[in-house]
Length: 395
Ligand SMILES: *[C@@H]1O[C@H](CO)[C@@H](O)[C@H](O)[C@H]1NC(C)=O
Ligand SMILES: *[C@@H]1O[C@H](CO)[C@@H](O)[C@H](O)[C@H]1NC(C)=O
Image (tube, rainbow, N blue to C red; front, side):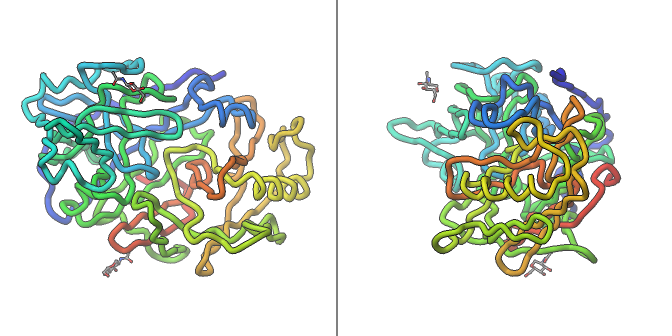
């Protein structure tokens, strides 16, 4: 089992400026490997996953600042960090952010409109403090909503600060977080998400991500670009219109089927397709498919790969052939995937399929399957764009 590799790049903050309306940000993301003890049981039991991965953004919170390393998550809205005093905090390597030591921390009251931004999880009964309660499949966080000064450092070394960003000061946090993950930063479509809050001051509520494949040297950082300059355009770009679903957080598309080579595996064998049945979620490593679809897909993948899988998994010692799979989305959007996206190279040298079956009618595309795509998310235009890219070469 590979140890958790943690790399701190000492970036000099050369200059600090408040956001210049219209100029975008280019940040780096660190890939964090999670050991199996931290993987939710659902994920651990159904396949061999020696480790899995999350992508981390660094944000300086407060005055003087504490550097918070937060999981980048397009599947939720709230930015929260572990916060003193802890009712219950999971173990954390770096110091826990302490609002009593920051001169720019302000708790929000229930009367404040910021307390009620969409996606905030505000729970205001019987108290004047804007408390929140936020849950995930595999964890939860409770605390109060507050505003704080936040700053990010671009690849160029320039630091940009934002005076009053709403975030969750989490006093009661639990889940499958490891000691290097100090919180989670929501990049969903909701009004409280970090990108929705800072977007207007950096040229729009849009961002792009280029995530490294799983087995890349973790010292190479992935890229996050926010605001102007983050548009994914030009030849070879595939753009899909996002579906408006009742859940205001998600980046949703309608997946109609998946081809393995030339063989189409339809999403559903019975009944009509639900619009927006699939979300893009960078906070989840694996792609999660309804069990029944996964079963049909797995059978087709086995048929197309020349070598034999290890036991009854979809892991192979070698020779995946040149398997090409295609995700078919509504609106004639076809996303071609190579084995870089469909198989992760494990530390033992084997290759494991990046999707698994779950008890759900909807699908979720995890971060492994988006590797080596430059993916542009545009909340204002309700689009998502994909461009096949070598993410080690983007800077
Ligand atoms: C902390 O959160 C857990 C999980 O939501 C909850 O069961 C517990 O009651 C909370 N503890 C306090 C003191 O609020
Ligand atoms: C987004 O929409 C605006 C206004 O409708 C348009 O000018 C712009 O070109 C669009 N951006 C992209 C990347 O499609």
